[in-house]
Amino acid sequence: MNKFLAYAINPPTKQPRRGTDPELILCTSNATLYIWNRETEAWSTQQVSITDPEAEANTALPFSTDVPFTKAYSFMQAHGVTTDLQFTPDFSGAQPGAVTMVRLLADGTHAVTFSGITEINTSAGYDNRENILNHLVFFYDGVRVMVNIFQDVNAQAADIIAPILQTAAIANATRDRIVLTYDEALNEGSEPDPGDFSISGKTITAVTVSGSTVLVDVDTDFAYQEVVAISHTPGSNPIMDADGNQADGFTGQAVTNNIEAPDETAPVFQSAQVANANRDRIVLTYNEDLSASVVPATTDFSPSGGKTVTNVAISGQTVTLTVNSNYANGDTITVSYTPGTNKLQDLNGNFAASLSSQSVTNNIQADFQNVVWENLTNTTESGGFLNYQASTAGARGTVPLTVSAGFEVKAQLTSLCPATVVMIDKDASNAYAWGGSQVFEAGFYYYGLGFNVAQNGTVYIEKENPFTPPKWAKMRRSGNDVIISTSPDDITYTDVHTFTNALSGVTTVYIHVLFAANNPGDKIQVKYKVG
Image (tube, rainbow, N blue to C red; front, side, top):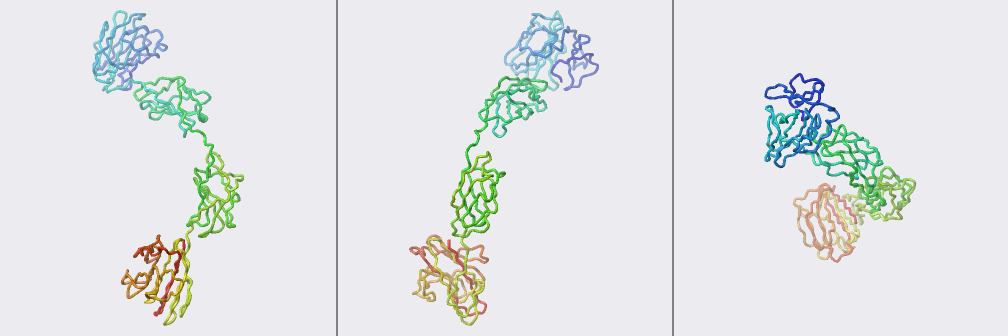
């Protein structure tokens, strides 16, 4: 029900709806107070004296156990009971017919009594259960003082404590907004008018209540280290909690300014590189995000190698320069940048410095290349393959590799015969010799029906039997070791053997290939790369 006294011109004519209609009505046309009795379901009346109810019914008196009767209707501030209370009438300036109301929040412990005040027989009595809100209406008829006590329908624990402002702050992310945070959830249906707030030098454009916060938006951003204060005068839509308790206004409330210092530092170049997957692109990386809306001209950049920039793209912290042709493995790459009209800059407009012959990391991997065959006998070379042509075929390829650079040697074996050998050794000649005098560091070949690995030509280890071509086999350097692996597709390799310390003390090795086929259709392809 309505917790406050209602004014009406005419007497009530119907039963009030519980929870929505007032049950205490002061009729101004006949100076009568109408009180709804729930037990008899009828209105009881009390004559009062009325002077100016509209002017007198807006300001709450401070709470006191001395009940005044100086106005036709007055109400005290709601009070939470924390000690025993005894109410007594205060007849100073008392007016016959005056009514005074107070709301008491019971604490379940302390008693409420009356001295010189009579509780009328329609009173519901004081409900002392914890946090039950009691409405006490005191009447003075010029002779005696009476009190009527009632509670809300199906009275539940109530809240009479007004929401309390905890903080006022401006966030760096929303520099045009003050966030007022209260100690409890607020009534989002009661949003104050912008005119209820004032901030020096600002126009308030919107006020929004959300959860326990009141968002006060202004027309222009606040600045770093700006001293900000806000004032609030409650209006027709006051800040209140869900129970209707109204928050106090405030004057000159200090606002915490969390706006960060402006960025005045230019973006700093970090690195430049060309990736193996994008050989025509130089990627410059800076230490912060750059403005993608201000893109330098292609002519502001000068890459090495006689290349020109065809496109400039900015994303996050990177600048990608597309050049007119690919770089290759081993290229020494540099790039220069001379700021032009559209200068490279961060999100706050700080310009990046120029670059002069800045070194670019070349991550382009070496490409495999075919072994150059020599001493071809009864064979032809086609597309990198050595092909059998007659009953006897022999060929050799000898290629030097620098061990310190790292290398890979692989062969596509479409068929194998007893004299198909791929090996690396530190001897540049005598590649056809096979036996105790041949010194080599690692190799693989076909023997019997299996795929074999061997070192120094005398001891072999069979790794796969049967071995069914076509298949790829590969040797690669790992530290001083040589690792042998195989693959069905030249994509996924499986390690099958490691020659430990095979390259210890060795600076240069040579690829040797021996192909002495005796079956039509036999062929072999050998490739290598360094680095």
